[in-house]
Length: 110
Image (cartoon, rainbow, N blue to C red):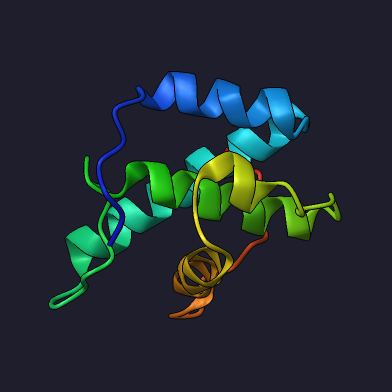
């Protein structure tokens, strides 16, 4: 689990964008992924992967990293900019990919 950062989520995302430039499609895909996670956690009994104040920053950097890898962006800066250790970021990336989480987004989900 990550500590709750004192930085607002918007400022955190702008900080990531400043030091790891990417296109807006990464952030759009991140929103779709968060929507999927919220639907999974609402529909599944015992599903423990939820979006909350204590983990939103960690989920954001993990989702941005996964999405960036999917779009073939370089991801070397995300651990430093995101304020996470590489092992923690790798663990969060795995959570995104578990339970048959599909990285491809249909036009219906947009």
